[in-house]
Image 1 (tube, rainbow, N blue to C red):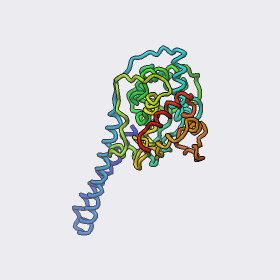
Image 2: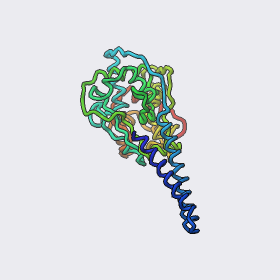
Image 3: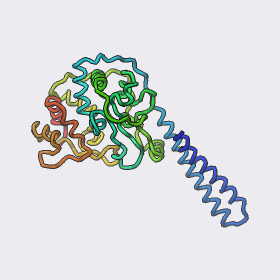
Amino acid sequence: MFEMLILAIPIATAALLVWSSIRAWRTKKPLLKWGGGGLAALSAAVVTLIGVVLLTGLFKLHARSAPTVTLKVAGTEDQIRRGQAVADGFCSACHSKTGRMTGGLEIGKHFPVPIGSFVSSNLTPSGELSRWSDGDIFRAIRNGLDRDGRWLIIMSYTNAGKLSDEDIWAVIAYLRSLPAAGQTTSNPPDHLSPLGLVMLGAGMLPTGKPTSSGTIIAPSHGATAQYGEYIVSYQDCRECHGQRLTGGMPGQLGPLGPDLTPVKDWTFEAFAATLRTGVDPNGHALGEDMPWKPLGRMDDETLRAIYEYLAHLPGG
């Protein structure tokens, strides 16, 4: 209903302006005929263009799709333990600001323009997941779609879909093990504003990472650059620090992150301390947008893997 109202406003406005233009054109007063009529016609064209862009945005809003998934996770102790490690080091950046996986963070406040409201969901049994199947949760993580096939905008902007199948199963097992906590969050969690719809329709907002129905297998867990590359692939490092991790570029959706190649000049101990204290070896405090607290919850072996990957980056 809200979406139809948004679309109806420019349509009604354009119709009114066209009517005004015709009325002005019929008058015998030259100034009103050419000035008022021309201005009304020009305004009608602009409003019509906005309506077309809005309609395009609405189409994109509902265009994302991916097959449903049939899945039943065993929920073993090993899966729960691994799932907690992934959740603590990744998911908690958005979903544990008000309590463990209870959501409630208004992510929209972190964008430079008011494109909408995006409240992280409560992932405990107090939230919607208690009514979702394991396959529903898998599809949400891998492809950014909820149980009803609605686009989970922020989820699709993250790299959560690059988690391996086994790691997603582990996260599901962990979420199923949580006690109910916190308050119920909005469903759906994401709502684009009219400005956000216009930007989406105009191609100024991304439509999310591509969906996938393939299998993702992670490298063996260990303190290796190969495993570190996997961790960095699903963490959102590149959304801020650039595709080559050499620094963000103006115009990107995420905050501008610095070049990470200087990490190769740090010791591992200094790197780990940076992510656990929020202060780098030069005494500079990490910015508030940097999720160093979740990253710092990772064990030494995982942090060592990330360090080995960053230390072998070209350049610097």
